[in-house]
Amino acid sequence: MDSGKASRRFFEEHVAGRTGADREDVRLGPTYGADFGVVDVGDRVVAMATDPVFVLRDLGLERAAWFAFHICVSDAALSGLPPAHLAVDFNLPPGTSTETFDAIWEVFDREAEKLGASLTTGHTGTYEGCAFPTVGGATALSIGHPDDLVVPTGARPGDRVVVTKGPAIESTGVLGVLFGDDLPLGKAAVEAARERFDDVSPVRDALTAAAAGNVTAMHDATERGLANAFHELAAASGVSLSVERDRVPVLPGVREVCEYFDIDPWTTSSEGTVVATVAPEDVDAVLTALESEGIPAAEVGSVGERTPDGERVTVDGSPLPEPESDPLWGAYETGRERFGSE
Image (cartoon, rainbow, N blue to C red; front, side):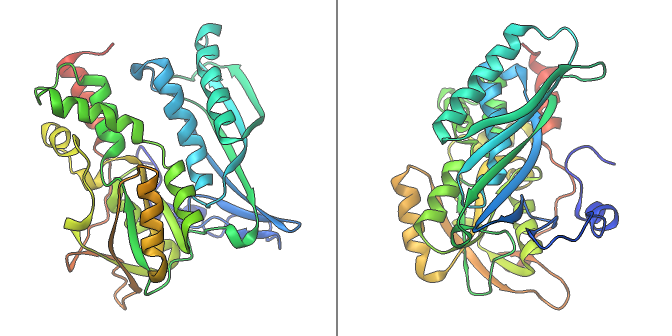
């Protein structure tokens, strides 16, 4: 397997059809392009998602723990239901200090309380072979009424495509925080890049949009970026997307950082960015609600039928290639080589 998230081909060849018992209470099971699964429990639905506990200590423990927490709860929030419970497994390397664990856990506790979520269960230990930044995993649960649930398979022809924040938010923020003092971009661009780190959670985006109108599907632009998010949402819903590039927001600092590291903004990690499909009559309400929360967003295209040749995403009328890799961590290593690491 290549590093990073498994590809669509890997999912189809090795995961699909091997998902255990066929239970009637599973509303949404493993689906390529779906950020979470859903089960029915009485008159409620439970959306659940599992992600790595990713603590990039180079960011400083406070920022790193905040980033790790929001990665863990983001996918469940894309159901449109607020995260309610989090189960966290820490597999730490031997020698990890209690001070390090306390610094991480205090942030998890604080952020969970802000969301009204319980840190309900988990596991903590130190084990040979474990190493930062990936030091475990977590499962988040969101609970709500079925009518409030947004599933990634729900996009319909005629819906409009809305994007929050735009491409390369995570990559710009991480690289800006880590290497900003050394980047020859000018003070304004560096400060803007660092500010993007504060945008790397999509939780408010998702919950705000879902509460404002008929959002039919949502997906976040994590590994392989905005381009991959378009492809995954289209694949999950069995539709095509037509997007206009110039309508996609690009926040300050993004172009400068991506040009310096020679990375494509559309294919690099953008945790914090949400792609949503919205019923046409509710687009204005969703955009207004996002604006009221200070979240940049724009209507960038439309949903269509899946084409006979399987083409899923076009940008300005031309097919958008499906990314095969993510340049963020190559840029991270480049920065460490040029500027050193803390």
